[in-house]
Image 1 (cartoon, helix red, strand yellow):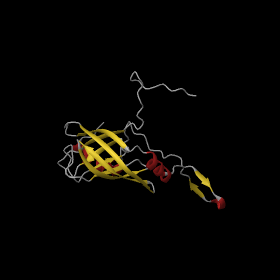
Image 2 (spheres, helix red, strand yellow):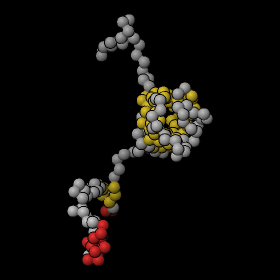
Image 3 (cartoon, one colour):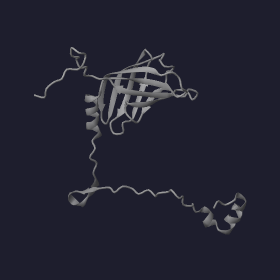
Image 4 (cartoon, one colour):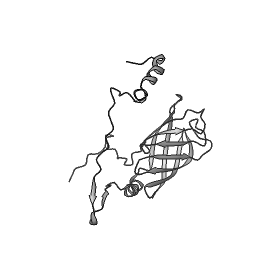
Length: 190
């Protein structure tokens, strides 16, 4: 039962502890931290174990990342959908980060890009270095993502520009030759 605001000073005077205590919500579930598994080392020292190696994953990303991406960009203000092509010319692992260099064509206007991809969190910061930019983008902004290159948002350089959404998918690298009927040939397993 909610307390009327007029009764609040009376409630505070009667019981300051009651008024300062938060009331439990019906849907509240208290946070329980996960159990940390440790390993006992020689000499009785106990330490935490992390099995994920972000440095090795950065090397793997740099080697196996598709070099061509296609997609589309649309402003949050509902503007037209603009085609986007991304070409990665270089991917260099630097610790748990991958340094990306290449070019991006937004609505047919190609600009150089430079970015950093975090192999541990899949966070991406991609700077578009050209002027002018396609798709009504303004120089000085950046694409930021927590899903790698697949989905990111445009962080505009000014508060009056709403930004937008960039969605990319890797371009198929294996173009299969068509058979005489226009279909892909069937290959045997042996």
